[in-house]
Length: 194
Image 1 (tube, rainbow, N blue to C red):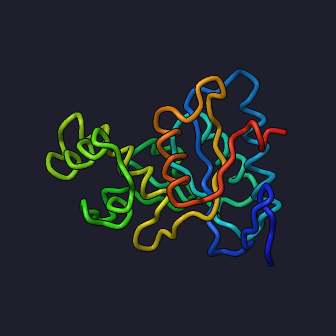
Image 2 (cartoon, rainbow, N blue to C red):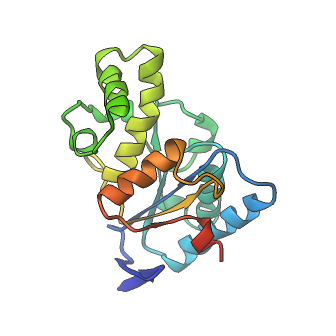
């Protein structure tokens, strides 16, 4: 079965992975909108897998909506094993620590990173206990969320909750950039919120 996600053709199948991610800061009142959209996606695309990075804010609200309908179709990709442990109950989780990544892993290597990001990623592998490496673990998590690794398939589409006054900034912007590089269709609430 082929479905349209905002005008793009995507298979409604267990092999289709849809990323749900966004800002930690959510405008007052948008929590319900994000939750309801996650729930609606899980109902309408009843075979797809929904992946998130398990962050506070938008990630949490999207996934809570999906979990209400289909907790068995949630994948959380974590920057480290115990990241927000209470939210991991009853869903599939994978931390980047468990994936045996290297700087040459496809999820890391294929990203077209700026020099600043590349240096942080290098530190993640060279000095894993440094403050910079801890910060980089979130970037590595974002790359794995999009590109996949091992048993984690690449995503087919993504929905983001962004700061519409300063779009494509921070970790959410970084993840959007990765989607754009791979020509993966993605939308923010300026589109899906309507």
